[in-house]
Amino acid sequence: MQFCDECGSMMKKQDRMMVCASCGCEAEQEGDASDFVTTTEQTGDELIETEEDANFEGKPTDDSVTCDDCGNGEAWYTIKQTGSADEPPTRFFKCTDCGNRWRDYN
Image (cartoon, rainbow, N blue to C red; front, side, top):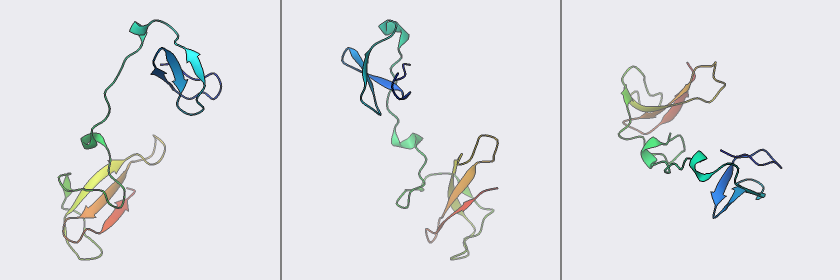
């Protein structure tokens, strides 16, 4: 991994140069090519869906919650670390019946 000398952001390899994703600064690659690891892009299955139009269907369900809008006792959920590492994660819920969304901070 190589970081920009100008702004400190991570640089990405472009042709034979390293280019900063933030400021566009270019630099020569440090080390040889065997020092760098290429990863594949994430698939949609690995992403946490918290946006308004996110599709929660197929995610785990929790039957110990109650929807405030319709009274249904089951909701899909995802977990995301929204605070610092020493704080508990936030659970985002979507009612399996009416689609109402809410969060629980534990």
